[in-house]
Image (cartoon, rainbow over all chains, first blue to last red; front, side, top):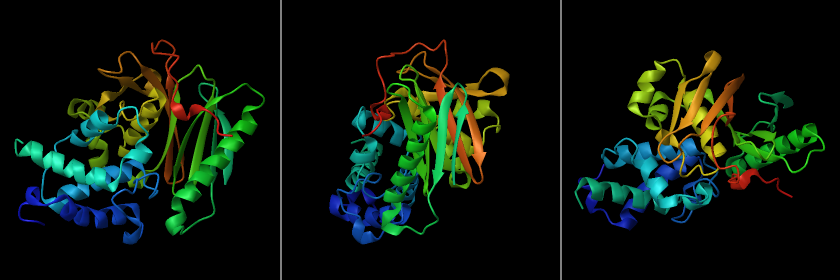
Length: 105
Length: 191
């Protein structure tokens, strides 16, 4: 668990989150890139994505408020095909956004 | 295993299970094949009706397809019961809603009801989780209603257990207002 996850760069966060994606989606780590769509490319299901949110919370030692993921998806991806637009990078950006919000930034 | 039957309110539901895995990287391909086979089966059972609408779900090599008229909003979800814990179910439920269910709705059913209702709205990115609320309905069945941005849309529900899996489907209740012109984008049969 990083001392201050809010100080991690996008690249560092990506390297923390990629193994989590591989583990939850049950695919080799090499299959997980920044642009991998969690459902369309990696075969995940919606519940897998939620599980990934939980694991990011635990890995980074942060608390993700109830409904935070639901609200984030709705505001960012309304009307879009979630199977294709939610990627590994999406999870990195979600973690950054959540930490920034909690820091008051 | 393949099954097909008519389910309330007169929709055709088909389920197909691919031979057991492990599938590794091919998991998504296998799942899509399962749902495609289920869809073909359902279309065959549906008979010669013009341009039916459909909803699909798949998990772990099992595909489900629900077919019905284009004028009805409906959705289906298939989930392994042990896959959904109370944590996942609570994450998509408002606190008051969870309390009102009084432990009577198993986590997998909570998930299936919300997921299938989200599909039925036509915009699951917008209408999911706490925007949809599970409430007691008539004759011991639960219903799903839309909150805030999804006003007035009410879904009737049914479910059946298939071994360790739960198959859930919902459809717009007769008195549920909504936009009949807005059909889910995935409801067109694929060529």
